[in-house]
Length: 180
Image 1 (cartoon, one colour):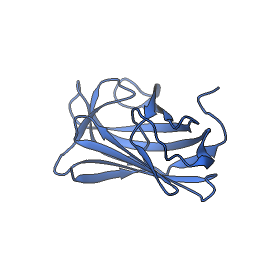
Image 2 (spheres, one colour):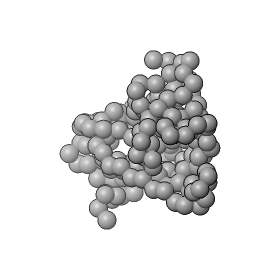
Image 3 (cartoon, helix red, strand yellow):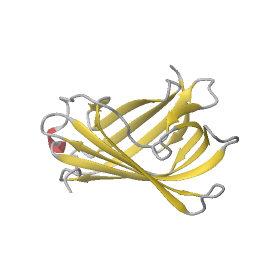
Image 4 (tube, one colour):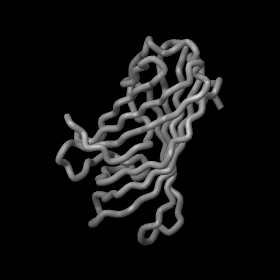
């Protein structure tokens, strides 16, 4: 599937498996990603496209058993009709399965919706794996006007026409972010 790129600076979402190629320097450590995102969306019960601002965060933990866990968060201050200033939050946890290391770079690919959308996350680490930079690309199938995906905040199908993220803050933490 060819993808038309519509944004850079996104986050990870994924599912389940084991990765035996986790660099030893990252075992029992986490990475934390944060960014702002502008979306052009249409919910199932609405007509017309709406601009939507979301603050996003993703935490990823590399276990000693070779598994990669992630937590994704989103926070939105709704500005559309009837919801001025009201915060809406969402959170999801999962085990990451489509994650591979290529040298000092972590690559993740995640299909969105019914195959028409895709996210690619690329996290580049310093040689000692104590610093990182992240880039995320969200795309849609070649020729598609949009893609539908279950929104984390709305918990229902949302159609996405454009997604544009700001710069991603990336940090490596020497702990399991799931233990609070």
